[in-house]
Image (cartoon, rainbow, N blue to C red; front, side, top):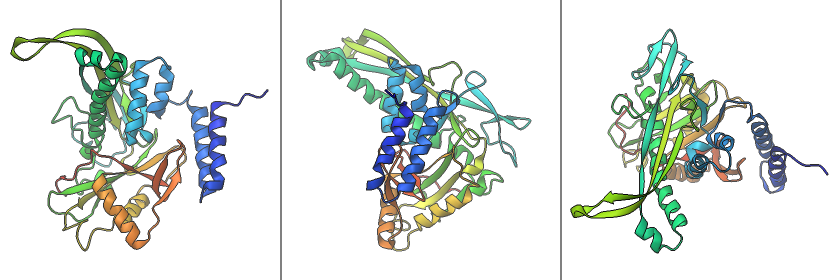
Length: 360
């Protein structure tokens, strides 16, 4: 009897979907890519966070937290992660045509990228947990709600993190792509015309070991820590005390962008009647195609995606329907339906703000 490997089964499942697909060649490419990813997972050191979780083992509580984060955070479908090479920081070359952005330590062409820390205690009322009947299930539900907050904060820091304003942050994409006149990253900021402070941004990112990836501290469990402190007596109002089921959760992560040319910010997208909601809105698909043309070259090991908030995504759909432009839905390698432009996934990221100041 022949035993098929996990990667072979995954690839075959995708190929079976050809008959129902309007683009069977796309599915074949997805199948080959997934098979290669599974084959390479044991040797590569720049992986999806879900792959790092698999290395921790099925009994790991940290792996469970990672898998939950992946299930609700579209950013983690694409963003690769690498272990730091200098304890809680990472030293890597950076393509430079000017000084490193403020917040990075740049020495002889090598930038030092620091990680940040998000942590806190989940406090679950033991009385409510007991009343729920299944204490374990109730506590897990409450803990995951708390973890979701940490997950959203990590997502926020990827785009808006600023270690200068908040030392617990890591430096996010907006820290680098913050001025159109900047000699280096400014070339990859596109001005969609908004002039007030009711703007959003659309991002194009090409994640790979050479272009950009996430970080976690050396020797850690992909940056995730979980400690069950059990039942603890907690202070309440008016000196009263109550019993809590206490869990401590921590996520240490960072961002490394060795080659800024593979990240593009479409900035100053006005969401008001002066922009997207008005009679002459900015051409979102035109800007997105221009962003695609801006990155030097797409290669197989890159995971490329657009990131957009719900407001801009709504108007993108409106424009696509009016102009009959090709935003199409295809089957992705993980079995989920995903909207794409030129085969690049379009991910909804709720932390992207609608009140960004004008980028100049």
